[in-house]
Amino acid sequence: MFVKQIEIRELRMRLTHPFETSFGSTQDRHVVLLRVSDGTLAGYGEVTAAEGPFYSYETWETAWHVLRDYVIPSVIGRELHAKAFGDFVRGIRGHNMAKAGLETALWDLEAQIQGIPLWKMLGGTRSQIDCGVSIGIQPSIDKLLAKIDTEVKAGYRRIKIKIKPGWDIDVVRQVRAAFPKIDLMGDANSAYTLSDAGVFKQMDDYNLMMVEQPLHYEDMIDHAKLQKQIETPICLDESIHSADDARKAIGIGACRIINIKLGRVGGHREALAVHDVCRDHGVPVWCGGMLESGIGRAHNVALSAQVNFSLPGDVSASRRYWAEDIIDPPVDVSPSGQINQREERGIGYSVKEDLVERLTVRTQVFSA
Ligand code: OSB
Ligand code: MG
Image (cartoon, rainbow, N blue to C red; front, side, top):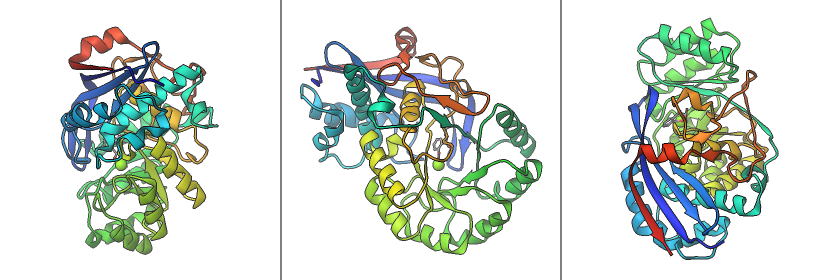
């Protein structure tokens, strides 16, 4: 396809509730969207970088800079397939979230041109995906228990709670006592070191599906040491940026599960490669979330159709995040905790262009 025009926009969107992790709280999101056109059709992608360099070094502002000055100039006016995007930006180190914003838009456009749903073009087979929720750190345990109750009643198939030092073992104990049967996990977002192994040994008593990224955001070695000391499977999030990372982490026993995020790995092509490495090693994967608008969410849904996404992901309904999402229809979750893939072409949801325009605070257009 011919990359005739690329539009980059920054939107301000307020989450219905603040979301707190071990590295901080966020509510007012800066959502960077990419719209790429061949002159006839358009594809959309989302940059999942956060408001500050806390989950990773990228922010919405670094993504804008890297896209404007390096990524977009590498592909504008070129003839390419979405799967070849990585070859055009190979010289740009890191900044995977910036790259993924454009890469995913190119996949949407290519699926639009072919007139097929993206999930099918990617080779996905799951026409329904299993959904979990990620619940941020709450002001009190009672509030957390009430949130879990709401989500379990809504049908979600797995509950993830955020943990940090001081909000960990006692919280897990009380959640387990109140909900003995639910599929439960904890996500530490790198808040611990190997000297905290005792905390995770205690967690072994509460039948957690997994503990996500307990240690440093660049580490694999200490995770392997921790995994040897505990029974609960470790799931890596922050540490995995590529299929090569996945191969190394699995090889040294640093994890037994991997969370795949499109932004963190640079887009659909690398996400599929991570998926395949995990599948070949018998390691299940699930799709992570980054508090996306409907556009990033729709890409997550499409990716989750891959066969080895055998665990419920952090892909949940639009209404959990936004009073009004920017796609139509919003992403909806069934009472049995699943999202149905759509048969419409591309990401399968249409973008509410009027609403996007109202939420936009800056735009830049690049034309061939
Ligand atoms: O670690 O998975 C994470 C949100 C922001 C940054 C990191 C993470 C998260 C979530 C939320 O857990 C997932 C979601 O509901 O989108
Ligand atoms: Mg995580």
